[in-house]
Length: 399
Ligand code: C5P
Image (cartoon, rainbow, N blue to C red; front, top):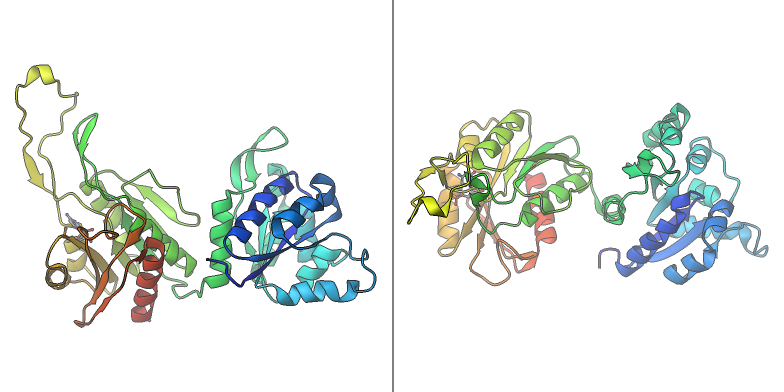
């Protein structure tokens, strides 16, 4: 489990989104974390500490002086124990206190005393969030290494709409994972990843495509973001949730994908071409829907698409270039020749006919082939895990 053996302290301050922190505590615990909650006095007016006690399975601290025999050690104990501190929701008040060195209750005092990473999840009314004082406080905290999750835009409790919403739990979980496991292996590097299957238009309602889900490419983009890279994900699918912290470019067909990759390529440090590109496209793309009344039999003439990856290999100037080979036979042999022909640094080869590998599911079975001829074979694993391995290996070679 993701947070096995990790101690996560969740600080809940008194924003109306305090009830949403209950979902977060539950998720963290389900992923194996040992969760300890500290609430501010105002948070405890919004949601009862019993909720957080039940969900975390641990005592909840609100009042520093409630247990007079051990109050002085409790904040130090939690501060020491923590692998990560998540303050969710983080009000303008708690942000302001920490930014200015105020430690006047259990939450602010424990934050002050910890050496663990602190991840703030600001959620508040848009005007409060945009207030230059709050912005300056966040900037100051960032400069000291405190981390932030960007609030979402949308409907707010004050019945207005704007930036300041408590983010999706998956976003907070991803940021927590990054804080705990990210090693900044790709800090300062710009990475472009392509994902999903291209859709080649036949007419306004039909297209030719393939079984690629985009999951492997999305997992790679997330792994690169976790390692501190500046990531652009060029996606041929809209079916997957937008990953946090990644610049998205949506495209449909191979020619749009080629344009998007080329636009970012010169300024990037690495390009990972995980998209399943249609080798052919309909030569003519009908402006109007093709009617069955008009044809007894229909022939669609196909034209070959550009090999985008080959093109990137040709104009490579120091970029680390990764390709994929989805094969149904002689995977390694085909992979080796592809790596050479397309001038790649690494190739991820998989036998898409094997159960648990390839296009659709959540797992993959892959071999990594390298420019110098060596090769590593991996057992079946989740696409997320494989994404991390690809990024780690790549980062090692880019040093
Ligand atoms: O030649 P093949 O299609 O097997 O190569 C697969 C690799 O090449 C993948 O990384 C895929 O993204 C890329 N590719 C491409 N343009 C094409 C076909 C494949 O960039 N037209």
